[in-house]
View 1 (tube, one colour):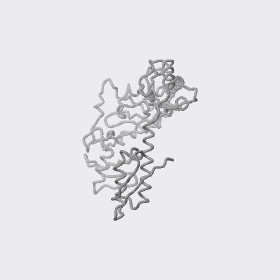
View 2 (cartoon, rainbow, N blue to C red):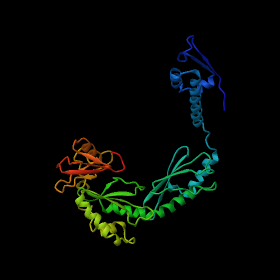
View 3 (cartoon, helix red, strand yellow):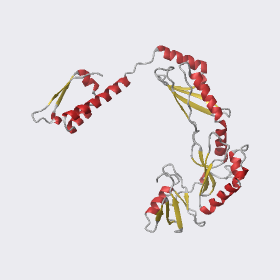
View 4 (cartoon, helix red, strand yellow):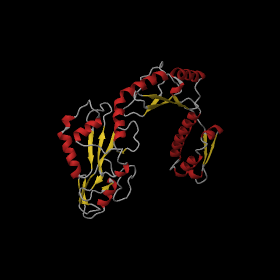
Length: 343
């Protein structure tokens, strides 16, 4: 709602790009750092009215940024009350606090001894306004907040959420400790998927429901058809054996009638076979997940590499999301079913 006076001196040819701008020192100060933008708009605006509209937009942005830079600090009681809350909660729970007390990190342990962090972004009107909370959870975390709430109430809600997810993390930790997980390489606590090695160029991708972690997860087998089809048949045939009282890993063993490759004997490198086209294991975070169906070949490829290879062949053809062609290694027929992610 502020008014600024501006004088524009046009040259004899009335060309805006050669005009001069005269303004007060207040306006000059506000637009400092925007001189290049103003000059550019003078050069390219088709007429004076368009330039004035664009200058108004630049001025609004400059004023907004200026206000954000000159936000008054919270009153002293903001800091004193926070220090009192941290003292009541326990200084051992504090991991980090910035110099402005606007970002605070707290820690807590779940019943299995895992340490978790919660990051709080406090607003100037705290505690009247709820802070923004950031956690590494597989499900949304929302805080119940009133103007009388404090760090203690957030931490107690954080602990309750940890308890509700304990079984999920127990399940995922057992998988990480007792199997060879190919993806993700360093899973965060929020990750619900695991790609587990079953053998050379054969794996299973599972998606675990964090609310019901012992139930049958979504399963997808990756590998040559002659290897993964029998596994799919066993899964369908033995699904009645699934017992939610047992661990998810034990259920997978029982239903698939397999033992997962043991970590004590084999190394992860035994399963990390490079792509037969780019000769790399990881490509933009992805590992080879396409395998030649020829039992005498079985060469793995990245989906994007095989896609580019088949697309370059004159003999390949595509039907909907499936591409048919020849294996780069054995020249036997190979098919590529495109997933939802575009190569």
